[in-house]
Length: 165
Image (tube, rainbow, N blue to C red; front, side):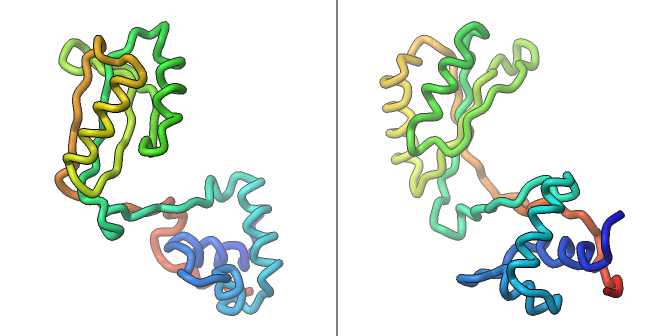
């Protein structure tokens, strides 16, 4: 059973943490708790699986990263884990993961993301990656994003929760 204050706490954090040096203190003030209790309750909710994850959502475009590319490779299945580990070591690789192929029209199984301030820079980084990891012989494609879809974390309650303490 989840306590009413925990419902209010989840509702308070699902829209994102306040941008402040002590965001939990601000949430605590809003809920008439102290900062340590907010942190403790969030940890407990996460441990119980009621909150899946607390993390950062970086809005790259607002930071000037307008040239964002998903790079996909068709790597032999026997090598994909090894290549994925190798690729993910580069600082300019933001994400790297394996996905299943989808027929002959989408043969790619290794995905990685490069966020860049220009297409030229991203393409230079990709060339460096390909050369450094000996990926020249594997089919790949680069998909630059054209627009940004809504970026947000999990929504646990569609409307504000106004449960009493």
